[in-house]
Image (cartoon, rainbow, N blue to C red; front, side):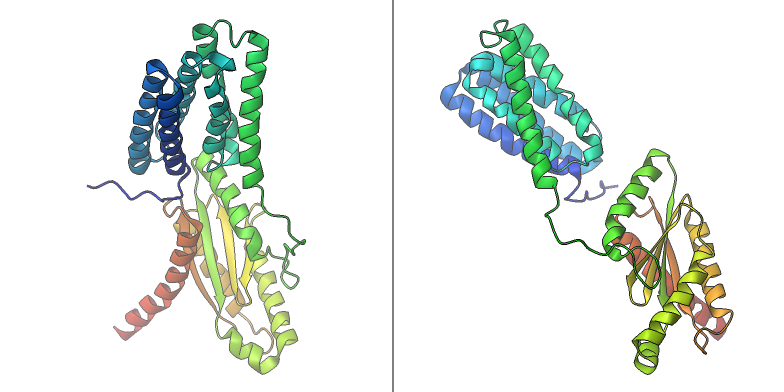
Length: 320
């Protein structure tokens, strides 16, 4: 079986690509201004970078932190053999935390910075003078590491914008702007706890017809009633989003696909059980499950497809 194609935005893959670029530049710099030993260390880093790229493509995060430690160890050798903390290659220290942190989740940052100590050990052993003053050398490395980390943090910071509404006024549900952020938090928790995360898609059937006939205010009043009925089936840690005028998404921690589908069916039964706004309402309800499906966009597509698949299956069964 061929390995599964890795998402090109996967942090380990992005780190590996930046690692290759960094060590290519370092090889050029050591070839021009360094000697045989710095060039050999930079070349070893480039080889490791290409290996990390292949591993990231095939196995994702496997061995990711091993390659991070190698980055610092090999850079330490380049710096130590190229003049120590007072030499020209120490400036490259700032680039390593930058390319390691920029594509990585913030929760991983402490683990990516900690291997800096490996480089300090190498410098302490291979460059006893540490640039003439050991304390000054340590401070130089720390300052350069902080500079690279700070640059990554600035680029990862979202642009300042005017305050946006995060709660839908009609339903009290979260707006779609909160969905990626909150989903990522729930998904991280599910992975950490080896649990599941059910995702339910609920679409009000013929809502546009209702809006055209009854107007905006009455259609929003209808949505408010539907939202109250949805809430009856949510537990304390479940989250609900109104992602479109007629579409709701539920995130259900700890629910597998069968449980998520049961919630979807229960909500549909509740909404259609009695008249709302003088007419019978119906939901197209479907579900998907994380981590069976990993990306948010794919989960939403799968839940929406599931909502269309169920009525089709019922129609085929009735025809038979």
